[in-house]
Image (tube, rainbow, N blue to C red):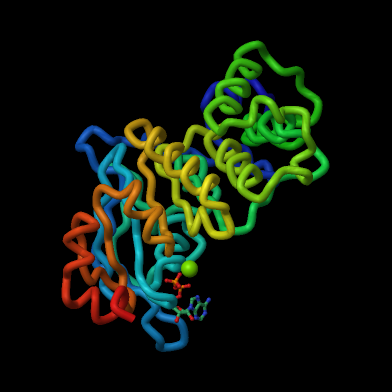
Amino acid sequence: MTDTAIAGGEGYSEPMGHVLVPGELDLSHGVALYLDDINVSFDGFKAINSLSLTIDAGELRCIIGPNGAGKTTMMDVITGKTRPDSGTAFFGQTLDLTKMREAEIAYAGIGRKFQKPTVFEQHSVFDNLELALKADKGIWHSLFSRRSPAQTTRIEELMELIGLQELQHRPAGLLAHGQKQWLEIGMLLAQEPKLLLLDEPVAGMTDAETERTAELFVSLAGKHSLVVVEHDMEFVNSIARTVTVLHEGSVLAEGSMNQVQNDPRVIEVYLGR
Ligand code: ADP
Ligand code: MG
């Protein structure tokens, strides 16, 4: 298989040389993610219990809920890391997430940020973004192919978006915690995901970094759908349109921050403690 064939959109090349053809993402009905009656058990314990959730195209959704509510497991289901025991999960109108492998789901346009940044510490900000931009073409291509003018422009756009232009030559290992998180978000964005899953993105950030992250997420909404799991209520309040409260693996409440904060069930299980 040649690079031209891959770049021509014929499929994603896995290390084993397997070609995946994930099909087209169809957002024409305005829904990015559709979960219905999802169940996940671990040794008889129901981590996800008849969970139903819809995320619109371009929506910025915040998910809150006490520890153990199933937030991370939900992201594992969406990304194909965990298979649900039952239920429906669609990305757009046509992509059945329960039948796709992790790599296919990522290739189809779902990007996930874990809590711990996974940047290449010895490489500069610029080089990390370049590697991310070329990542789907395989490691050989990433390391040795020449950078096109379009790729250089894209890297500059990404650096501006995440506010790291001035630090473009700095090794990622020397960045502050928040800057590292932004770099990783930039690396995710290099893959042009339609849906971004962010698990506790502002954990460990300073107040100033948290505010900057809020601005970034608000600016990404519209072009991307974002699902943000976060414990920092001030942060959630500053970005949230709709908030979903998870509890014991299902949706306890959904609405504006004000609505969920005043919901007696939410106060009882979560905010009131
Ligand atoms: P949250 O992210 O909301 O804190 P999680 O999704 O991590 O919650 O966990 C939900 C529940 O499922 C917890 O009780 C957790 O201990 C359990 N759980 C999560 N992953 C596993 C696993 N791989 N094996 C067994 N139990 C798990
Ligand atoms: Mg979690």
